[in-house]
Length: 175
Image (cartoon, rainbow, N blue to C red; front, side):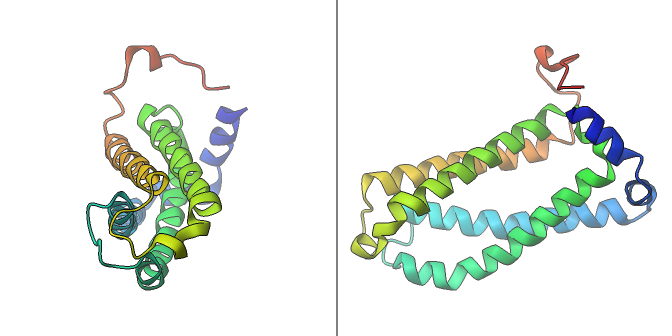
């Protein structure tokens, strides 16, 4: 099922046009990397504030009001260019171990973020001026730092599709 979707996208005229374009993919990749720097940079500072290792005097609400609009812009560009890159070369990404690893880390980072905002973030007003965050906030920050490190490393490793665990080779991903 999953493979057939990737194969269907692979033969779409727009996918072929992007793939055969001289500058299309390099421009997508450049925009993806630059926007990732913006997104990851802001998230890392946010997480370091939550973990209590940086920006201890900056209230979370001020940081959020100042930086989150930029992060949202970067995230929209990053998600759009990432989707376009997969759209342009779906059969390059489908068997790639690091592509799936990166997406797994992204899902875990999303779950961590949703948990923070749904549970821990509701009480931010009570502790945002404290130099030491509550334990749950610190753990969410540390978890996010680790997950974003994994996202960045796995994303970079996508280019090295030959460097995969032996068990991955020949694995049927749902064809």
